[in-house]
Image 1 (cartoon, rainbow, N blue to C red):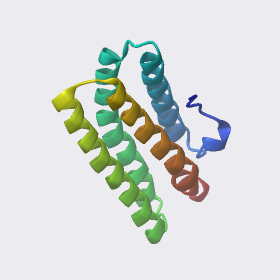
Image 2 (image 1 turned 45 degrees about the vertical axis):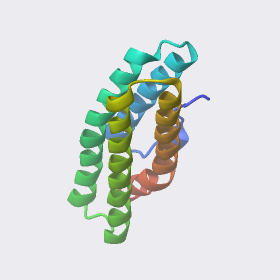
Image 3 (image 1 turned 180 degrees about the vertical axis):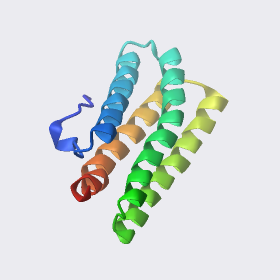
Length: 132
């Protein structure tokens, strides 16, 4: 699976797009490590990055929504998606802390992050970008 940034995923806000691109790079690093069976340290790095990224990036988007008076209904939906990701990631982190990296865990992490991100960026973040 190739997790590739394309211009179609651009929200048109450089700071947000740059953070998305960095996330794609990190997830691709994980996927490469899974393929080459060298994933234990990479998984820990990606988990640490994601934990920080989620807070910094979601806060940035939520700041934009607040600052520019984003549509209340859309803001609620957007923030709810962020919260769902946080909850799901917290569960993944618990599993990682308990059992460590494994092929099945790495696949679950990859599947969750990739599918959520592609869906969230292409549907929810692009709406915010169009508004801004």
